[in-house]
Length: 192
Image 1 (cartoon, rainbow, N blue to C red):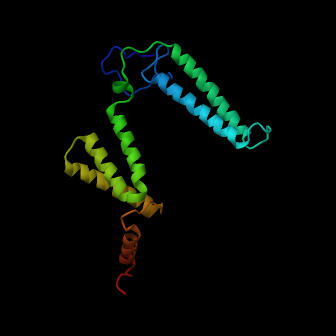
Image 2 (spheres, rainbow, N blue to C red; image 1 turned 180 degrees about the vertical axis):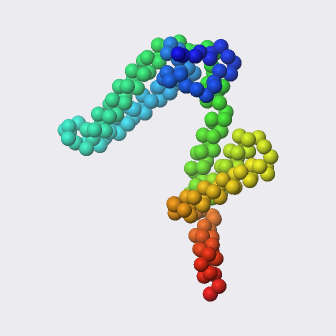
């Protein structure tokens, strides 16, 4: 049973109709541009795969990558042709329904997180990300924001750094010295 929410002003209830693109007979905003992007990316990857060994032999190093990317390119071309024939959905817009400001903001925050991770380190970068994200999403005061952000960061750090000993970029925080200080306190090795 397919439910059509297009008549409502706010028609997204968080469920999926499991139809690629959302509608069988109409094209959503940005759908054709995304299909074209997939086609261009597939063609680029096919070119890169060709550069591995060319068409030397079926057993060459580039044969499987070329076959895979050729299948991607053909599939993307079929998707572009099918999508281009569909009429546009008139009740949706790219900014409201597909790529709202919140999605763009968090995409930008994730890019900044990736760029700042090595120079600043995990702790300050994650703290900055969590504070901004929780403040924006919750709309609550700074006390709540800082408590939830820093409490979450402490929990994440203890679980991943202490329990599972996952190495994270240290950056500007002297994390190794802090860990050694707490180890010394726990073993009584601080008073030598």
